Length: 386
View 1: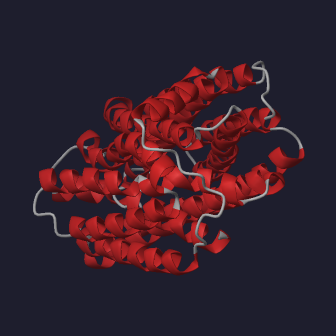
View 2: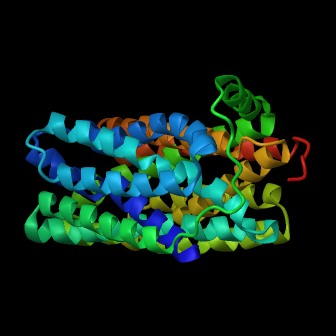
């Protein structure tokens, strides 16, 4: 189960963020500006976010593993098709379709883990899954940058599609079927009731807001950093600029470590400190020396994955403690997550065009300041077993 979900997370995020290291290349090839180039990322995350609203109810009726398998195979196939897109408009359409196809996995994974893993290890198991997503984000971007420098962006995109297909086959073989899933009858009133429950809890609402602001800031940084490293005073080639995504490796560690801390202590204590780490990393990136910029990327990446790993498990546990609807709550959390990515990832392109890195820093600083306030509010909301 651990290996399968690790690979599933790896494939999902490698496929979703294929264009991110290619943004300067895509801007040149399709003759668009930086803000327009970021739409290749935002269309994928927006399609995923919309589909999550459907995937949540679907998984409560159809089950967990079936939707995960369908999602991985379909998104890999569309990923390969993206490599043959003849125009910018068609590429954006395929990216939206790919994001829509990807929704089945993230909508289901945390609910599946909550049902199949003992409560004492739930945060740790979720942290391992989030670690897989971190490694997928890193390896996908590194492969893309290297292949694009050698063979161009189309070959790079196709290679990631094939990687996703290989992971989909492996997950099909390894992932155990659900043993503790109890389907909900496909009655609209009952499904609507689960959504109302997921939208009526102040703690869950705060977690959705935390999700959107955290991810919005994180994607804003990674969308803009490629343009920063490509230009003066660094003027790095695409292969070297892509090396900044090695910082995702620390995210794989920090998410699982934060999960262990949350199991041992309390989610309410761990998440605020993780956001503080994010802000510290952003502050380091304001300095000019390349080594300090890279250290800042590592620090903020560690903080982001620690906060997200604990918060995503918190949503599933909180909704289960309140009487069900884990699929809906997880979907709403991830809808906010990818909505934040889509909106603020594109605004980052505008911020970069207007004010370069200082504009991006101001945008992300405000978002993560709001996230910190939400974590402090979460500490004041009464616990429901979690």
